[in-house]
Image 1 (cartoon, rainbow, N blue to C red):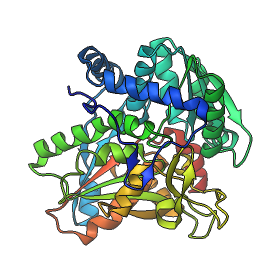
Image 2 (image 1 turned 90 degrees about the vertical axis):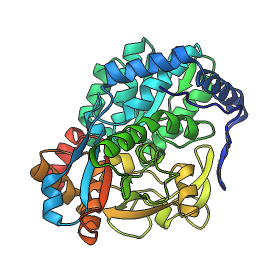
Image 3 (image 1 turned 30 degrees about the vertical axis):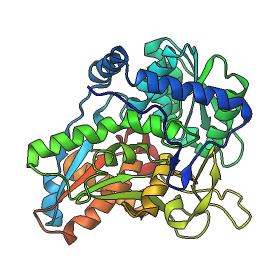
Length: 396
């Protein structure tokens, strides 16, 4: 058990990225959120309550798993998975959802709104609100709701109101837009429970803090199992919360190479991928400065990925900073490679990964045979693939 943050004020910037670019209506709620987060970060009772929920409700710690068959097949580095797919609701999203919902309840908020793409954050938020007795509204793009129908059904079964968004590309970006509009209208009783390390300050720092449990556990587990740190820590990056959660434990270990895997989609041309760290430029989106997929006039370009959780034209500002400072490197895996990894992990190890996580697995399988057998690759398996079965099997 450790305090969340002991600073008097959180730096809103990650190098040249981050900040707080929002309507005046939201400035005071964001200040209150930061103040409460800093106060609660030093409150032992809150930390105990949060840790108790993570242990007895979420099911932490999640294990690490050695991929014996794939390691043997590729005859190179040893591959380990951090099993966030085994957390309650099937993905890492629950770590942040229960922690942030508890924080909101302590602030006196009775109504929670959230956005969702793949549906896992929506399910996690609805789950947290059901447990804590909070009203819950989830915004989801109509396209995402169709390709993630099981999660849309779960959200409604858990008692949340699901509001479909039919504007724009009808995906994650548009769901965030609608959630922000709702928050501006209902700031007095409403907390916007952002699901990734995106948005205006202090959200990227808060979500990072609540997801850091992934890296803290994985670091201790791998040291116990192997006696050493990983040589490579790999995670998929859409907004980037599962990756920051893993990377956070190794930022100060220069011998650990951090690799974020973005969605290469169907090509490198505009509108064919969701890889702003590879093909984007600096700009403003959803209250923060970060790397974006945009045209020459600064208009957002629609993104594409077979994995709905990666189908986002921006990225968390900390990832933009890690790329700029070269502390982390970022690569792409295309739709076909992710689908092949989805199938290969399922058939070789008996683990069905989310399509988002399949991008990270695919890159690990590319990297492993180029390394010696004494090297260790740690992959964050951010979620399980139940939600993707229909779309993945159809695509395969």
